[in-house]
Length: 79
Image 1 (cartoon, rainbow, N blue to C red):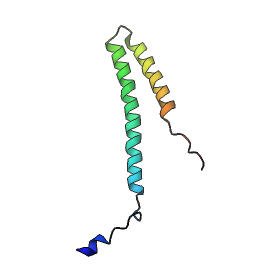
Image 2 (cartoon, helix red, strand yellow; image 1 turned 60 degrees about the vertical axis):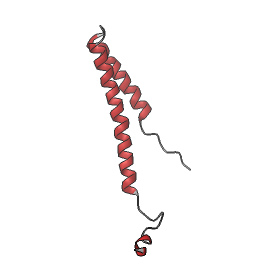
Image 3 (spheres, rainbow, N blue to C red; image 1 turned 60 degrees about the horizontal axis):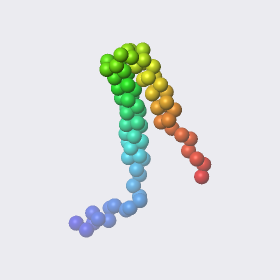
């Protein structure tokens, strides 16, 4: 039983797959949230106010453009 404890060496494992999974999950969460906010703005303005479809579409478009500008990947700073 004691032999199994020596198999693991801290800091020796390749964690590229875990990093890729985490990055994908964060990207899907970020862009999925933006799309839900834009869709919600469209539907609320379209059906719950007298503004109508065109105003809802314009608001959703503005939210999407601002969201893309804010949420896009920034270049990494050189160290």
